[in-house]
Image (cartoon, rainbow, N blue to C red; front, top):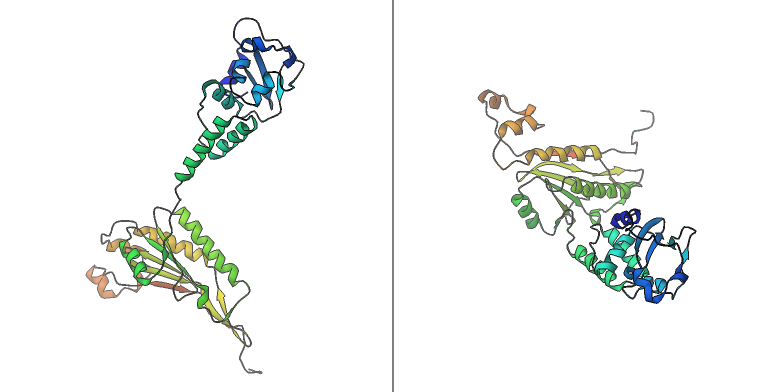
Length: 317
């Protein structure tokens, strides 16, 4: 059953009940007085022949005797189509208009049914609605791409929220990559996209494709750099050097969460900075004695550990 039309099927009008005859029993002069019961893909509908033949459609051809129509033993006329949107089809035939679904996919489904039944007016309505929804589409988030150092500086200084920047520039490498470096570079980019969707509106995410590093994350709060995670290193094989790209996922997540502490307006809050800073334990004793904590430019730089796979020790040592 589907919509109000199905309720009509359950509660037929008073008077003589419709006979369960097929099309052969209909006569052109009395079509408007006939009630028919429709089984559309398992959904049951109850309407008049007058509604079905009001427009020049396939339904008019079916119920004006030009096409053969099948019915079951109980008199339900069978239409081998999905009945999900047939109620909307009937409403359009009655009123020349219909309230379209809000979901884009359902509008496409209704338009497919309208095309099958050759209801051009309803097809036009669906196409117009789909075009309006396409034009009103808004992206989930916008990611600026750095084109110059001055642009980067301007973006970070003017940002009213924390900033996370991913720099990736494969062209800066002069060595061959290790076997899994390409995969790790892609994982860094995918994580950036995931974080930008998750924290959209709270953090400004920007991409840099002109910098000097191959893959590096930078984190900013209140206009200054707070941390940096460099994901590349040089490894030494037996006869050559190779560039290795790491994917320190946990560290990147941690630093992203840390910059959320800087969502507040740019009002000095030395106690918060002191409590959340990794370097507070390194503050001088004189600062502790004075009870004041002066904010100093300090950046946490986390680099992947460099190591060598070549053992250059002398034999016998």
